[in-house]
Length: 316
Ligand code: FES
Ligand code: ZN
Image 1 (spheres, rainbow, N blue to C red):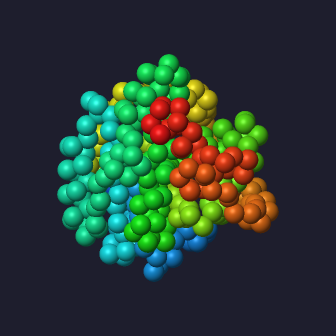
Image 2 (cartoon, helix red, strand yellow):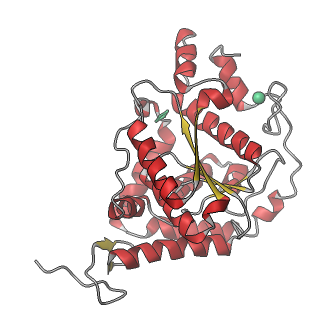
């Protein structure tokens, strides 16, 4: 069977079909298109400037592989440092993924730091699960995992003195976050998902999401075309994932399948709608500090969510 010709260069054989544009693309044009979209997003919202030092949060999945590879092409690799956090979940050992990331970062000339959650924030996900089980409390391990990872990344970013933290959140994640916060009526979180969202504490290192206009399925193709073997294993706690986000994810996937490009339009429309509105949130005062750990917490709390979780699990 003859392969179609790339719709962009009209020279090479196409290796993939871009659903949302109906274009058949060769590897080179596909990769160039992803890089261009990331660069446009960075430029449009001034996410990162040339001289800044950036910490890349790399889990080892297809999204973070794409982030690593694309960033190394558009930013000086000596100004990039990769961080991988090991959650501490029995049976969820990612040694093979770590090896692949090590080889990749070395070949790109990017420093790679590997740390356990326990080393940085004092408790692994399994420590937390043991604690709540013992006390008969029902809190999803993912809640702790997400909050502890964010905390650990921010602490490390501060220690390293980087200007920005880049995470591998993709378009699908952004669409879910927007819809979830709309359904909850949580305006503060809604504007925080915007690329110009307010920085509510000096203690937070600014987070950016360079892949926010790239579909998850595109990162799978990107990793595959580069021969990267990404992690297929699932976290054993996946069944405890909070249900609202899981439902929204399923709903949005179905919608995207029926009408390719819907998620991109949704995120673009909300970005634009919120563009001026976010500025009102820049005037908010600095967040208060947690009475136990001293890290920022929400306006109406004196303990942060992280310390509350550790208390629930009997870990402090
Ligand atoms: Fe691993 Fe939630 S803690 S999926
Ligand atoms: Zn605290």
